[in-house]
Image (cartoon, rainbow, N blue to C red; front, side):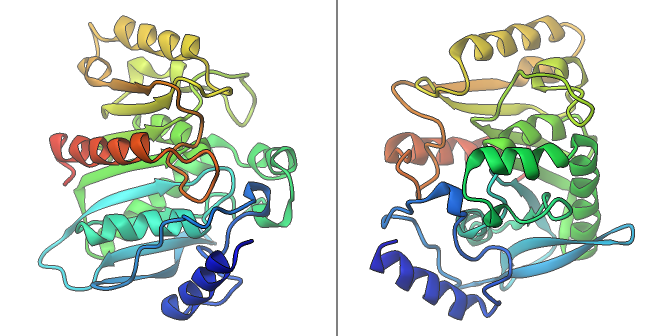
Length: 291
């Protein structure tokens, strides 16, 4: 890890005043090496840190960011993480939204299964964490986060969801919930094997969508084929006559762009598509009444 990143991490922990064991601090070992160019959003004008959200008898950790001074209720953004959980990058994304006037919440959806940081490879995380985190549980946690948000300054009539990789898939699934007004899915998997924990994938839910989703994908993504994107487009087109929300969904596919192109702490980061995608993300939420 570079000296710049080490200094960045120390400054982050001092500024946020949360412990090194808290979520939103550090990067997952399986995502190393961390790039020195990782974006760090400061805390000026915002409040940010760990929050426990009740889900029945369980306390769900989340990283929450909001404007320091707010007039009236705030639009809500749920940020769904990659398989690495809520680490520094995801926490930073919530702060970016808070700077723009949102109440941004990144729930640690993997909290019951364990800590992704304890595993050194993606394969281990998939087996020990992701496979033990069923979709129904995730969506229930997401709804609990919205209940908490509604009681803590959030406007439940203005709810958006965005997510990356694993969280991109969750974004598509969350768009079947009545509380969600719009979603932005960053390179989320669209098709896959059906299991007890993952009974449906985005391609299966076009008819049930209640919120339009903007899909941001890379044409050079080795894990998400262009064919699968075409299949999703076809599923949306098939559902469109009876479900206008399906017709309202859109895709942007960036040429010569890999998976995780928004992840500024990884070698996969591509500044052009990342910045363009971010602007399109914000515009999508504004267009669909979240902002």
